[in-house]
Length: 462
Image (cartoon, rainbow, N blue to C red; front, side, top):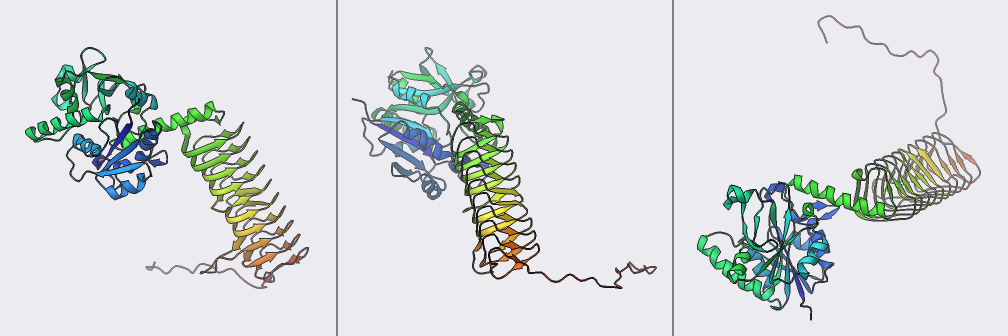
């Protein structure tokens, strides 16, 4: 019978080199905290339990990682990784297997973790071969594939420092063995008045003449810890590259996968095209043959078949219907909905409003808290004056209405079907259907008027 799996995630560190008030494990990666990615990977292994060891900013880390399947243990004193794992194993089934992960190693491949779990040795260590091993413990093998010891860089001689195989810190062992080795490591740490290191279990296992299996990562760049902003950025590009490749293999056309950021989830139909420097956040759903121009950002958006989102448009919590055209330089705020064939042009903003089928607002307008009927035309410079300083009010524009340029519709107000509102109108009462409504001051020309001239300068004065 397969022994139950217990996953321990170490997330107690401060992350000083991040130079941030945010705990290291809460730094964002691909639109989610680092710890979230680690927990997602842990769950793919179907563990019986997951324990997260928290310390620095523990309440914030708990809040971000809170879930029904997560147990938290607080490390009040930062006494090392060995101490943290020892705390996490308290009360756990001694016959279980234990997999130790890290809150700042978010992208470790599942294949690597499965290999660790499938190894038959009492203790399995995951290593990586890298071009620059600086800062990492070196792996000493004897014979090849079996770990003899881990030498920290500060204790390594020049020959050992030349070794490019490093310790990732990820390990798997039986809980009973691990507890015994950790207890011995605690005594050693007290003797040397140092931290209680998890890596001490290797020496303890070898002291019992127990074999230690060494597995090398299938993707070394994905198992390196994140300690500063440079390493965080490197892991971001690694994650985005992986997401872009997956999307392209599923049929998405990306003009430049190196300039594509997916910071959430994406569903798409066939023949969709995304240009360079597009950012997708939250839950984004694209129908078939959707085109998204360069420099756009979409967050929690649904775009139907055949729609075009032109360059440098910002869409958030909105819906774009089939055959619609948005942008360039348009902004759709939460609650905006475009129905089939509607058009929003450059420098138009919509909020909590509906643009009916075939309706259009092609430039320089604001449509807030409004409903616009089918085929209505909103002229340039038109705004719905929806806020009176205390409350929001709605504007209703009927089907086939024509709103002239530079009009202000002071809500609450209604424009009837097929009504025309003359350019420059400030509409404060309802405009009846099929009529022209004007509200502007009469034009006058003043005879004999002269433009003011500049006063002559007085010497010695500015």
